[in-house]
Amino acid sequence: MNLTLPRTLLRLTAPDDRGLRHTAKVQRIARALARHDGGGAFVSLKKRAVSHQVPKKGDKRRHDAKVDISDLDQILRIDPITRTCTAEPGVTFVDLVDATLEYGLVPIVVPELKTITVGGAVSGCSIESMSFRYGGFHDTCLEYEVITTDGEVLRCTPDNEHKLVFQMMHGSFGTLGVLSKLKFRLVPAKPYVKLTYDTFPTLQEYEAAIRKHATAADVDFMDGIIHAPNKYVLCLGKFVDEAPYTHRYDWVRVYWRSTGARIEDYLRTPDYFFRYDRGVTNVHPRSFVGRLLFGKLVSSTTLLRLAEVLHRFLPAERPNVTVDLFLPIAKLQDFMQWYRGAIDYFPLWCVPYRRVRYYEWIAPGYFDGVDDELFVDLAIYGLRQPRGRNYYKEIEDELPKVKGIKTLISHNFYDEETFWSIWNKSSYDAVKAITDRKNILRDLYTKTCRAARGL
Image (cartoon, rainbow, N blue to C red; front, top):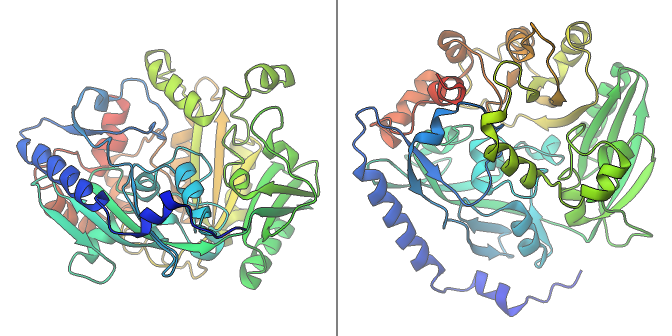
């Protein structure tokens, strides 16, 4: 890879007016937040990028007053010596990957959709196929700048006076102030990724293979597709300098389907990172003709924008299931036994990841008895619910039995007591008192389990 630095990118590592412009943006946002005095009136953030939360009919947040943070979308510094990047939260990963690859570097965890932002990756708990080594994107971050709703600006690191604020921004879904700047680690990259697909007939063999590669750390990337109860595909990737051919999955080809038919593949590194952008499992045009005619148009961003525009027509009673479930790999077989009997829907996306710490947002004692740091994310996308069933609620009821957690980007039906038996209310309230004492951003339960459902 050519590591000659273009003049435009050299400016990212040199002092310029980016820092001054960033400071001006922060001051404007701080003033706007400070003007809101609470009193039951809630505020949401206006962003440039599309929201990657599951669109919901009747979401009360659409009617909130807005604080505009849409211009927080710049890369402020790329340092190839320390292998770090400093960026504003609205930077999308597709732009970030393009910029860092000019230095032969990439973010350690790159979420699967192009327009997920670095701020969204923190507040929404993003992981991907490097996560079996490094954890989630938050776990690669070194410093956050946070604007409180009183207009104060905090510098938060894992070891300074605001260390709890730093840790609790993870999975906070925009309820603990405004994340205005991030500094995070980068790793060396190569131009291509070679993929090998190993197929297993049983879950036991699949789990053993995941554990083997996680322990050996002998690949750069690992995720998988569970095509059926007797077909488990593990996708193993390595950076390489050259490729005999490459494939792209942004039109007629569907990546997840290819994993069930191929034994090997090569992708350009950016194409690998966003291989699911045109459809993770069943969320894509299903027919060949549909993909031929509309495949270039139907990206994740297009679908999310369209769903938000047409939110009034979304089903209220039986929304399709789109959810990520995080559970210890030691409990995977127990959960899948229940899942086969209760739901039995495939394919599933399976992403192993390492829990690098006992996250402060998890309730004390919730992971008692879980000694294994290796977890998996099981992603259920595009499942239609039959009349009389609420799969979301059924999954929520089952997960505590296997020490699992679901992401809050989807439809949530927890009662408040159950919710705070999983999420850490003590730590959350302590940070809320610092970053949003007026509660103009709502608390986590109210925002994700009540307001999102129109309650």
